[in-house]
Image (cartoon, rainbow, N blue to C red):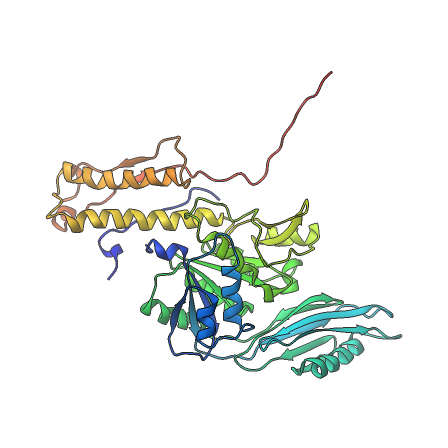
Length: 433
């Protein structure tokens, strides 16, 4: 039974209940066998080592990305995915020009790292190049692979991870099958729901879609990342699919190097800040390298309400800071926070008093609690101070008898203006002598 059964708050953002600790706490979803807990909290990386996590394991790398930020979360919670799947990546050869190079770097979850450099021979085709590169991949990395026409399918070991990056002359697509993350999230939520933003180690579209659909029905966020090259082209389906569904609680950021867990670093940098008080755009993420994306590529990502991490004037920054619906992440976070805080304040009023009378003075007590929380929202930069937020409630005499008999106070309403944020500006000046 939750507060919503007593105090039901809904807020709509007029643009295109979680605990206080929970808003600053991420949930890192990853498969592991180090314990049987569905969820376990860690205050630093040494605690994870004590629990037998290795330093190249996905869960460890995710937590490392969080703890490398300033400010950083006080703790992270690792949610255990219970289904082990075979990590599967498809490489598509895009270059068959004699003398050019096919390049790729790799990192395995046992710490093995390296690179492959194949020089394209005369009279090559993308099919012949794929055949040659596939043999190198299997020989050098030890990971099973196969080729068909221009495609190379690389299949890792069940329950582990591997990452490919610094690609040249080829493109990748994560085809890892579903690990049923929504099932585990529902089970985790029953055990412990005191967390706010989700990051997941299994990043294929089929898994991201399941998490996004799950989180859409909660007042939480899913911050995903993708290295699928198609997402920076015209045929991307993950970001555009979420945009078409106007998902309000899920955001996806593109990164060429998934092993840096850019989404985790981004989340770790933002969760310690007061909800809604800081934009997720224009942020530098420690430990992550900016991607050399072209204007055309960022245009495709922006057009699908996605996010990217690029360098401007020598500074690496995140852009655009939006969820899939196009709304800004800080707005969604502020709405979740405000909804929770209003519910908590009014619940405390109702639960701590011997009785809040069903009279106009009693209604005024409820209104006062809502107004007080709106004032705090102004102080934290969620709402603008002008125009002043308003709160209204009906006179008791105008409320239907059925509602009064049920002791339900309906139609308490408020209105306010989001403070927003400045992401760019135009400045014009005139100089004279």
